[in-house]
Image 1 (cartoon, rainbow, N blue to C red):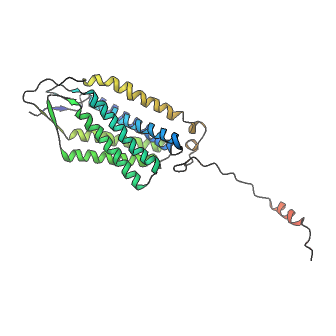
Image 2: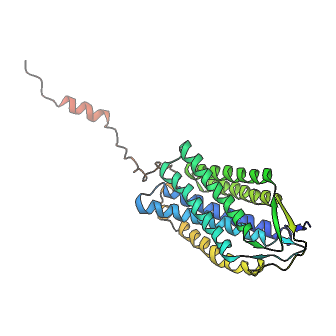
Image 3: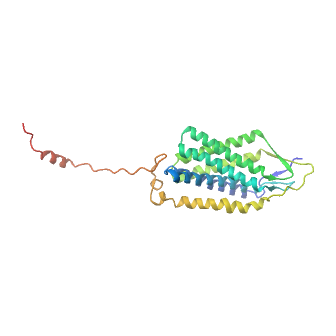
Length: 286
């Protein structure tokens, strides 16, 4: 028996909130990745790790906020907590690999393609692993072509975001790039959900023990939500902005290294002074 799926139980509340969380995580992650290009050693690794965790947490929170609006009318749905949090670890880990590749290799074609592919596969893996953690009296069936399309959307979105992180400078352009990534991640999520069909068991029984959907809201908002807030504070008080660095002046940084000092311009020597020095020379003896 085929189940009736409702992906918008609360109307537009869950998709809009999920989209905003995806944009927030992407914005923080892109800013951290951009800042890492002006640091070296441990500082660069720290910025990249903060960026990867921000993007991964934002996408994971976006997914499960959107899933709060998902229900199967004929069967109750519960969540397996270990698989749910394993999807967070997979998402953050694979996003981190892609960001570290671009952060240390730069905006080369090979680094962008490799890092974008790994990051996109991490986003898709997080999505489908989170779906595997759902328990109910039936099974999921996916349309292969639509699933493939969702993975392509994730890879293209991740590659574009990584390119923007190392190539686009300034607050407003990076904000626009984060909105684009938020749209793409939300599009990937709902494309993957469009590939879903639910088949209930003939003798459907209540779902196995697990966490109810609403009980996941608290850890989602307190855990990753507080982390995103902390990351936002770290980005806002960055010394480059406070001291008037390249972010404040609009001067583009050197790729992969610290900011170059402002060259000191010397005043040209006045013409009369040059003439005077020439006239004060003693005549050459013959």
